[in-house]
Structures are given as C-alpha cells and as structure tokens.
Image (cartoon, rainbow, N blue to C red):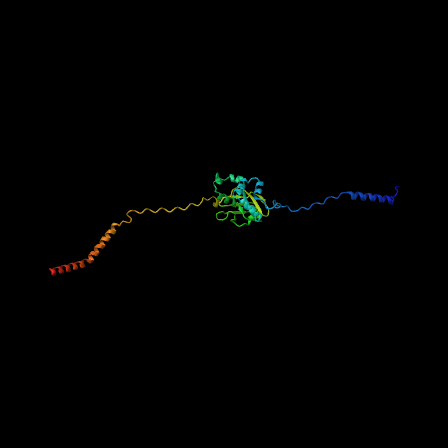
Length: 253
C-alpha cells in the first residue's frame, strides 16, 4: 500500500508544474486585414503613360499621346483631382487600319484622334448603362465627334458613326482614372473628313468690246430723226423771216 504524499512533496510538484506552464511562449496574435489600396494611390496621382507601358500593348497609342502632348494634359489634370476615362486602342487595332491612314493625318487630325479616345470624367463599367449619349470627349463638338457608349450589363458597345467596337477589358481603374482596352481605333467624321475646300476665286470680268462705247446705228438714226423734227418745227419761222428780208430789200431799191 502506497504512502500518502507529504505536504512538502505536494508543494514541490505544484511549483514545477507552474514553472513549466509559464515558460511556454504564447502564440502571436493575427494581424487585422485592412482594405486593399488601389494602384497608384499610395504614390500620388496615376501616370497614364506608365500605366499603358505596364500593360505592354499600347505602344502606338503612347506615341500619339506624347507627340500631341495630350499625356501632359491628362497627367496635369489628374494632379488637380479631375477624373478621366480613356479608351485605349491596342497596337493590333492600329495595324488593322487601312495602310497609310495614320501617316496621312495632319498634326491637327492626330490631336483630334487622340482626344477622341478620352472622356473628361471618370466612368465605371456599371455607369455605362446609364450614361447620356453622345458622350462628350476631349475632342470637342459631339456633332463632329459623336461617341455613343451602351452597356447591357455584360458587354459595353461603342459606336461613332464610322466604327462599331466593344470594351475588351479594364486596363486600370481607381477612383479617378479608368483605362479600357478596345480592339479598334475610334474614328469620326470630324477626324477623317477632308479639309474644307478653299472658296472659288471670282471669275475675271470680260474685257469691254472696243465698240461698246461707239454709238449704235439705231442711236445715230434716232439723233438724225430728232434733228429733222427740230427743222420742221422751226421751218415756218425761218420762211417768215426770209420773206420779210426780201420785202425790205425791195423797198430800198
């Protein structure tokens, strides 16, 4: 039969148990998960050229933005907390243009082409379902640059009167800038129409004929007729004077 433990032994056992438990390291607390930060918001306003370069298939469009200095316009406005929506055509979209189209454009046409792809407000995909058409673009007059955007909730369609295309994907989006990939270059009558023809110069006046100022035969006949009438009118008077003169000469003789 086992002997009961003495109080001294019990105290030693309790001491060793407490020491062992207190020496074990505690598990670290889980870190709270915060909301994700949109790309570009932590380092200032987004840069349109950097965004398109990162996507890797907008080299031609980047070249247009730079040559027309529209990239500076966008970036400066973004620094002022203004919003933009950009429909970016891929390099393949520019390759699909008729050969020589882009090279035939004047600098003014290239600027209009670039601005026609930019909406001066931030639009999400869901807002395309309620946006008012035609949508205003940086190109200006919506009559010359009509942009109609329609969405059925699953697909976004774009029409310009010359081009029908769709939004393929979202390249970038935060609360200020949205960039959407499109497979076609947006063209409008305001971009491709030929320059207004110069007004026609007035036709030279015909040289006056040398006989223009010579009296006509009818004019000469009229003058002769008028002279004859005058002679007939004064003929009786002349005859009376002549008779009187002859009478006076007869008396003197």
